Image 1 (cartoon, rainbow over the protein chains, first blue to last red):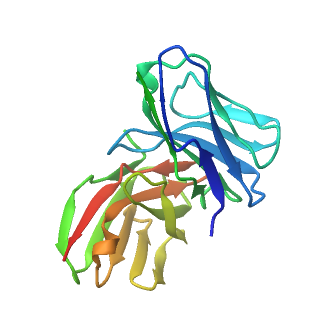
Image 2: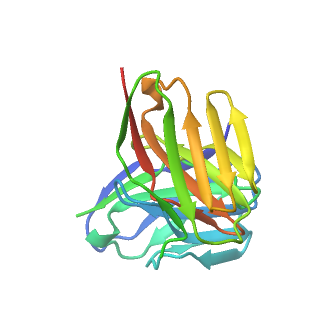
Length: 111
Length: 108
């Protein structure tokens, strides 16, 4: 069973606040990903990392940033939250590029 | 044009029926083909994957890939209400490309 954790699960925050969404995995996977998913819509890759100190932007333009200082940890930060950032954020990790294991997601609402 | 196309549904079937899900793709470089299941307000869960063309069976689930027609299929036999979820197909040649997902509702 995949062990990947995201906190918080739900977050309601005001416009302009800085937020960090946490993602951790205990499987020792080198590859980690952040996806954005609006209700009933498809997944969009916003950031990925293939190892420590390696991060890349995904297919969907995002104002968020990520860091990868430890293999197991891949936090996502929004410096100034806006209502347009309201969405579900899903973290995933994998050993290969195709067998990705997802966390439960963080549902973010910016008011 | 999206590289992986999937009908969003919803697809409603009675309990015990066979669920048939399909996707098409455009990139000939794709080598791995996956099906994920996503329950409401949860992250996707990998059901099974297939390398290149062929069939793969796991319990009530069968995945098929036809590279000549660029067609990906998932069949669920003896469907149960607990199979009600959104099913996402995906394909990979380095990066993973997801379809939009098909919502499946199995009615008792």
